[in-house]
Picture (cartoon, rainbow, N blue to C red):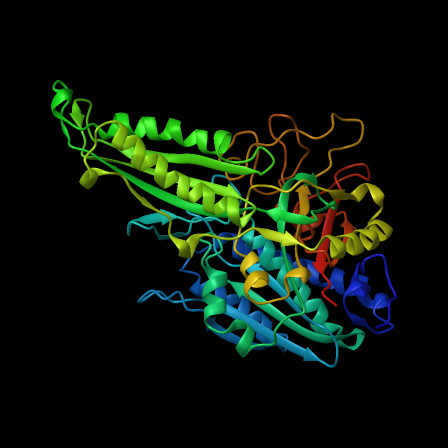
Length: 486
């Protein structure tokens, strides 16, 4: 393996891949030539999101692009094990001589969110909700960015095959937002039908770091995530005669409070854990006590034993709270935690993270690299490591997407929480012309470089003309990055 970094844009390649001389001189030219068409791809993807389990057109779009680049492309990869549910997974393979096999994964699905950005390419797309109703769809979690960066990476590597050797496996994964796509693709033989990776890479944008900065986490990076549904059953009646009922509303309220003692009294203070009740629904009118109330929970943890403790304790709390209130056994709450939508924790190999950080610091500068705390967010990329690719070579990292403000102005503004800022008057979904203010900070969800795994190119850009941006030298730095998996 030849360990030579050939250009400041060419990061970390030497840490995992066979690299040939002569790669760096053409890299800036390739990046420059791809920017306009990649922006068009981004706009198309942003304007046409599809919900989980419905990513048909998105999958066809990215598959066609990869096929045009010379990849061997397979569509429809995945098996949910549910009748009439089609998996739209895409697998694209490019073999280029001896060297490591590197999997680069993007997610395809959007969220049931109505966009309110005012952009000319804002999404007005709709999909089918869980209840069968028509709902708006939006790439509110940045999967349009992920796909654009992913396709840009494929373009560059396909154009520069003479500069690297190995095997690429580009995976377009559906249903990430439901935690089901990775398992479906593995069930359909992802690592048997296609080359099994030596390295598995994925990435997310980050609304805390500025664009151009890289966040790394060694060890546990993302939490195990479980969704729990509790049906609190009772015996309804008139609100003026509550003594004749078994009121599920008051029981549900007690369960919500009692659930908070799981983390505070049953889990070690040294083990991170979260039990959040995000939805409470019951009743139809002021004076009617309903027959049931439905609770929806999200449960987060890192260690498998803590995860099991949380899920078992939720059932115990729900059932025993009802028993304490005199509920009969046949009316005890029903607790369900669908295994197909639960995801294990993502664990990044600390030694590999250190290797990557060393190269990133050298090329981007010490101040651009951040060792971050793990977060309690999660996703199903972890299945690829646990059930397929070597777990010690799984890497998931965060890349900044918030622009630096002009020099001499007050630093960085505090942003609203994820998912919330898409509706907030204090933020916009994508970059608009002008400079940010505390009332209207600008978030770049255009910058393809706001994403990447630990194998990234970065290039600072000042864009003008049809893109509508005209920043002076001391204005925000916008980074364009592509994953270099070799």
